[in-house]
Length: 391
Image (cartoon, rainbow, N blue to C red; front, side):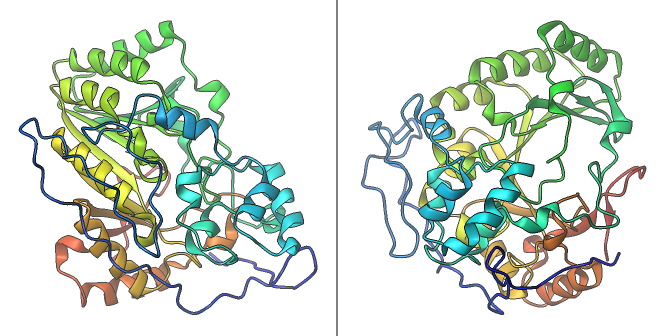
């Protein structure tokens, strides 16, 4: 697919030329040994580095975030494009483009995530994922609102049944962070917000199809829903005998690590289902000490941690970055899972990386890392029975 890109420089749209290699923050070691018999981390100060500031303070002596901390951080997320530019000390020439992009897809960035970005650098790989650009309004042939054809597989509100043996449940329409490349940035969430009777009908659908073994909670971000709602849903999934796995696709433990609190761990630990959390991390600088601690809490609750990334121009389209990402993931107890080829969603063509370029990066990555640290490069093709590996 040919992508039409414009690189003209005007006062409204500064040049997007970027350094050949984005700086990667040096590896952050994991925290110290567990000292309590109940498996909760021992009390201690939050470790800080010069490059990666710690996020919100831990308020409980047992190392688990205080109740409600994540909701307060979510409510306080940056939602104004000019405020984002000012927070990151960007040249005012970026403001008009950010405001125009925001009109198409609103800004949402938690402070815990913004704190890991480099002030004054519009090409910071974390900022690039969330900074609106005027380019988002430029129509590009081949870039569409539903690049994965999900509308064809929506069986009922909030239920997508695309692949054999598993279903996807839209558990929340909200996200903690709005990523500019999101393939669901145009998704009709208003039509996929089930009422309680509609959830009951969805659960009947799962009970009636004994081929379904896995329920996938997605969104939006499923962890943007309340623990009360999630606990109710998971308890009912537990009661369906042929279900064996519960999978959550989430970015919240990365952008607001305090989301992994006692209430979340309680309903996760109580489920009989095998639990898998698929995080979404695109760059090693996203993983700070607070993220590592959140992952440790999930692991102790019996959760298998995987990661999926998207290959993104200006973010992780270099072998050095992908290598550092896999190494940092493993340090945090997360296994690389998928590296997704870019989905051609309208408004995000400036992130596109060709399949040929992505293959070349993975070929080089295989020469640097053991196989278990090399994610599978794949594309989701509408109508196919599974994701398509790009070998």
